[in-house]
Image (cartoon, rainbow, N blue to C red):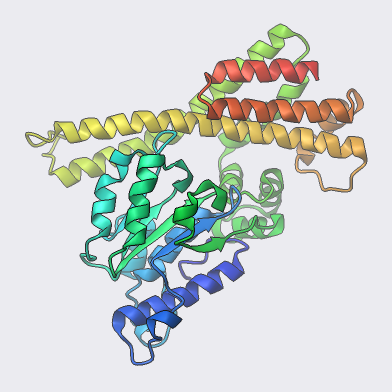
Length: 400
């Protein structure tokens, strides 16, 4: 058991980060065999990139845990990142005082969202071994917030480490990425994800294989699909959509149902998370029994509620994006059948529907449909109203 156990198919990355964590430990403890700073595999800024579902933020958090590891075995030559000690545990669950996590609650990370974090980055760690700043959505930094991060990365405090996560290096300002050591993750194999689901989640092998195949190696989506019957039903409804676009009315109805399903999915995801955050904040503020807040703290709760409201909007769009990914996978399989490709189908559970659509259309029309889905995703990124974007997509899917 270690902090690296949940990273699927990233053996080379784990090796790189484990070596850096060893050197970081040596630098902090001033061990007799510590390498000189110029030879250390540790550095003050890291940029983690990789395709969706590869586990980019999870990898960064595992590294943060290894940096904060205080296991006695570490002092005896064991690798940092035991997964059990207080430093590892609190980092992994998000409660370590010296690990600050920044996530986008809307489409951008604003300068005001980074102000306190940047200020904290210049302070020494309070309890841990390093002051760790983990930015999960570095691609969402706007110009002002990115410039604030750049200044902090250019002149970091001696015991501060920045961990930035983004889909690709091109999503981060050149001036920031040039100061970071890059860690590139890859999409794990379907077999590796299925094996993880069986070992870590106790999922039946057949269900695990189907979930891993359907999500094409996306670890988080595969886990949810394998363990949540409601998620499997939502996916099944999405894959029925191509057979329901016979007329304009069918297109508009399908679009409305798709948007409503995404909203319901987002609501279910947000409810539990929002309630947990609210209770934790009330406890931190010293709320009395019954939930009554101390005088002067109502504004803090209002800030949290506003943040959660903005995040719910993003969560709905993310849920809709998952549905569009499933739809893209459907037409990719249709195209594979039409071209006689030997590529393994992702959606074997709806193979009859795939063959029906493949027989009734041409490869050219399938490509146009895939492009229509991509156009819908781009429209959502530009903050087009979800229903309008999806209605335009379903009409284009019908036209072929």
